[in-house]
Image 1: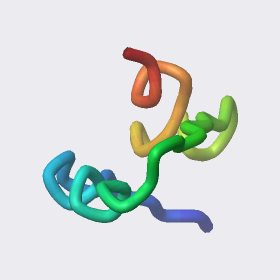
Image 2: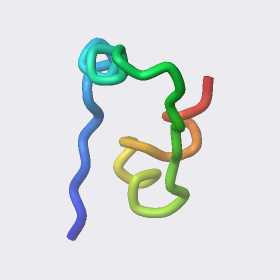
Image 3: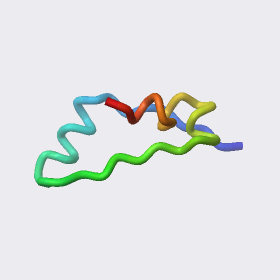
Length: 44
């Protein structure tokens, strides 16, 4: 069983601060079911 949880947005921003370009991906299967990285969660 796969379990996922969202990271707080502030934590993600802190992790990517040193980078000029970042690729954001979403999965359409298990992460979508967990609401932790599906298309909806990674869209802006």
